Image (cartoon, rainbow, N blue to C red; front, side, top):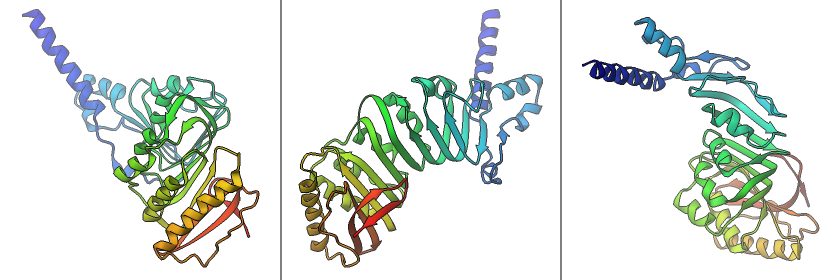
Length: 301
């Protein structure tokens, strides 16, 4: 009888833990004022039922931190030693740079820390495992990866499902990220879930006809004044590649009666980036550009 009683108590205790782990978060918490740092989760009315409920609530109710913006660099974790419960950080900007390997696993994944952010930027002297990269992407609505290394080869098509809700994407000099032949197939099967504002893809290694397919996907889901910008991984015969790809793009656009009168530059010269800007439902411009920084560009005639 004693063992049966212990089993019932153990089941009840585990059930209570699960109940508090799934405790809903008040949606009215999120708006707040910029710069607020708030901790939510310990005000649950269930905690008042008994000392046991209060103890479990303090240990297992999800926490939510809200920041205007966060910069994480040189292995500094601004959240300190979070308890091993689900913790979510809501922020407009999350910047990560110059970290030792396994930092994200050690400080975020192992501590059950999740992020919801308008803009995730990971850059400069950061090495991520494929799992760490996929862990960071789901709650982001804009992603900028610049000058980082992936510990293993990652196909872009495998992370695309985690990027469908992003309005801005920038992938520049991401070592071991490959733009594979399945990109277009997966984009057509799982199209963007939001209106696109910016797509910047550097070091592309897909043929021109697939870039045209990417352009078609972009134009279907892009807002007016949105940009598609890309460059090629191989620098050999770069001008010829750019001219051939741009010719394919222009032929495709003209065949579908797009207005190209705003700006169409046939000579791309030494510049390494091709930009397409959507001006309206049937109006685009195609030009070359030198990158300035995320979301900005210098056009050249």
